[in-house]
Image (cartoon, rainbow, N blue to C red; front, side, top):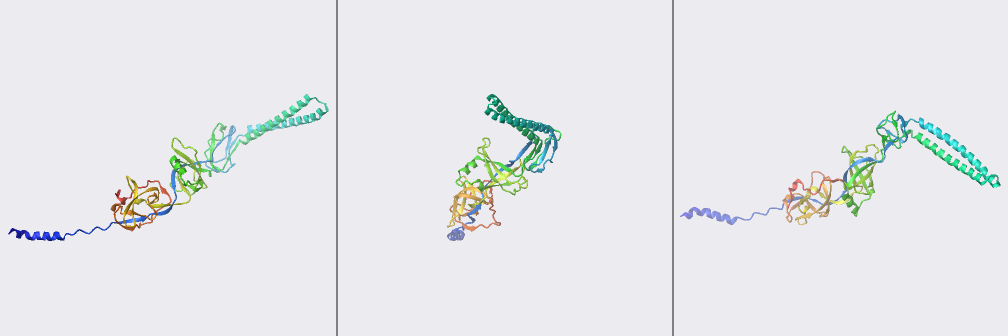
Length: 392
């Protein structure tokens, strides 16, 4: 009776097989979403710039002579008209005295020639002198007049030469190192005696790529220079307390670099800017704009481009391919692919696929998100660590 030995296990197996029902379906995964919304932002580009001065003056000698005095301390701030150098004036004082005497003699000769010609006018009418004598007297007057003008010009030239022996500051500013010393013989060919940099004519000079200039020129909303401001970051990383405005854009492209020179006038009341200083120039619109923003962490990238997952009204997952712009803090500007009010999956991206059903909850960050007003130069479209790669 071998069937008795196996009968009980077989009966238990058949009973168990009849009771085996399918397990319940897993609930939809939970994801956390943020709502795409219009937010204010300021478009901005950052460039490396150097500081230049429009009033960077080379002080040189206009006449030759021995240097007799230096009236400034190197590095001082001087006012316009302040004395800088003195050149020995003795030779020029003598030349001026001689020119003044020559002018006086020329004036006396002119008076005599005019008097003789005036009498000649009366005499020729009565026939007391010939036409030839009349013409001679007229010519002498003209010669005396020309001689007086020449002597007067020589006198003025001597006065100018004497004034050049006292070299003064043509403008207010900071004076540089004195190249010449007392006792040196200087001349127009000597070169620069010192430099003088005005404090309030500083400019930030930077180069923008020709591509960027072309895009701005072709834009339907090309901003005017009055709508743009320039902020600076100092060499130590601090923000310069004043902003400037663009005053010059070159009319040609540098063929070696493919860039265009731009100059921004910068106020300098505290004398913080110096020619040759390198800074970071932030070029931005003065007024804010409105644009559609989402967190940078929601972006995904694959071979088709940048995209996000959204949740529709039926709680189904959709893929939205995007065109993105600048980053502003933790957010990125979206130009195409989303509408205000769309629910974008920020957390739980690795759990979903297009078309799958989810339970969507609003994402509540531990701290308030920093939207900022300044775009970051880092490329957009990189997923965060929670996304665990491309979600296909």
